[in-house]
Length: 423
Image (cartoon, rainbow, N blue to C red; front, side):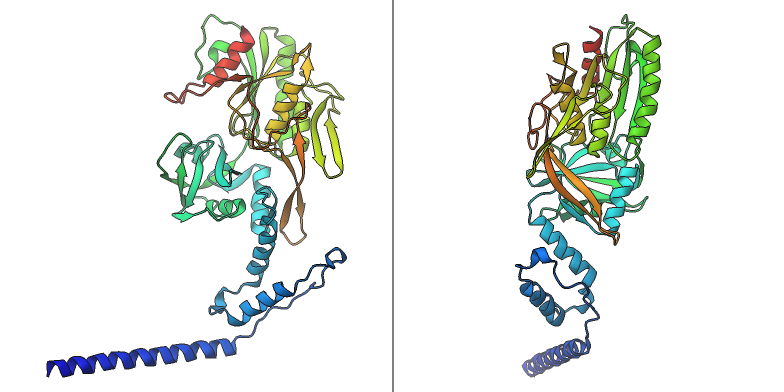
């Protein structure tokens, strides 16, 4: 009797499953039959320069996805188009050539303007891995322990190994007060670490400077008997307000140097500066180099062009030391390379102190596409005035100095720069 009941129960389960399957399949069929694509394709005809490209496969795939994909709620034509464009761009294998949909393009512009919502870290690509070029000073990322050179492995527990740089940036950014967890690998560590960061409004002041007695500079250990003074400028990025902010700071420092001959030299701190506009790099280098001096060489299929100094600066004769590290990239390397390669009285215009720089040797042109989206496309590679391409290699400092790993408050690199100027 017990066996009969078990058999009846088993038969009922099979019948129930078949009924469920039947209605499920028929419900899907009805849904698909009722589905009508609402997409109207405009500007479908290719331009003349693409006359030899056959787009039939593209449209064939799009049509089959529209017709056969089981979850019609996922068919977002705008996302599909943006994905197709991003796929085309990623086929170049260049992480710095990027298509930015409207939201991402707006985020980029806000960052260059000096204010955005996020964790405050500049990301890049090295050896096909997403890394932190530099956390911004005082940012949530820096306070949480994110460091230049950190590898990012996951964002909110999701692997980013197959993501392009911009997609990772989009996942990390978000409204003020929300949190994101990064799984990172410090460059001197063997074990990944989860770091939770609360997003905030990031305001980037690109230029900050001062003149101080060497013995009063915080974070360094030097003889208290030193009476010399040092001029110092920290440049955090080359953005929209950089040139204006730089001019205000440098004019003030220049006036102090004219009236106070105990000021021994100038320290330009480009550590953790991820770069920015090429024109700003030429502008900053022009403060220390005379008109007509080459700043950077640009190479593309048309040949080589030279960007040279065209304005009058205020620091032609002042001894200069430039601080660099692994977070100094792009425009920072252009300035550093220009001051190292050009000479004053037979010596390099500036001495480089710190760690090897990041190594980004290409130039991108940013263009708005008219619908809120933007395109960043690599148009050239750049070389230092001596013809050196730093891409993937970086600039080696003239004096290599590692930071004190046991005491983060002790700035050994700044200390060495000060001692070099006052000796």
